[in-house]
Amino acid sequence: MNTKQLENIATKKCLVELESLGYTTDKTLIFKFNNNKTSYGVCKYRGNKRIIEISKWLHENDTNEDNNVIDTIMHECIHAIGVRGHGSEFKRVVRKVNTRFDYNISRATKSDLVIDVFKYVIKCKKCGKEVGRHKKSKLVKEYNHYHCGICGGSFERVK
Image (tube, rainbow, N blue to C red; front, side, top):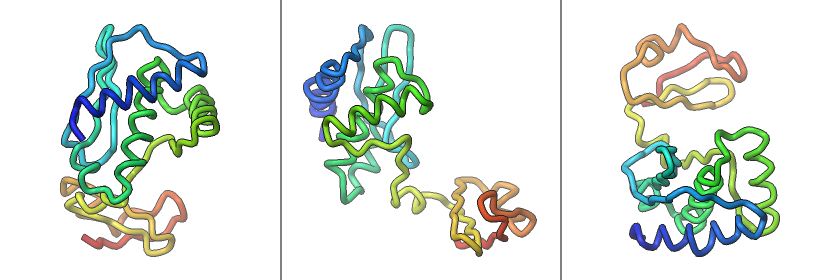
């Protein structure tokens, strides 16, 4: 997929579908790929522009790439129409879009691929929750002094 294909999906599919639900934008949309390895997409607000960036690396390495790309573009288009954050307004729009157009948009998608790009991974021994870090933080160095925020279990370093 190239930038032009990304733009076509957004303008000829996603924004048309959002418009049919009554959502529009008068902002200039710019589409780019980035090298982010921890999230599929981002929508940046820059004055009268909305810059939608999609992670080239994740989409090239994702086995469910077609669906995830379109879901991610729609997710970022929802932000581009002026819905900031992932609060109640975002959830309301996502419910409408998912129901009406059969998307599978979530608040934020973390791919199974994401955990593989972290240099360090700490895992809860009790519930299995994994925490990734790019740098050798205090958590990485002294993981035995911390407890899981979900279940209270102790951590082990797995990577």
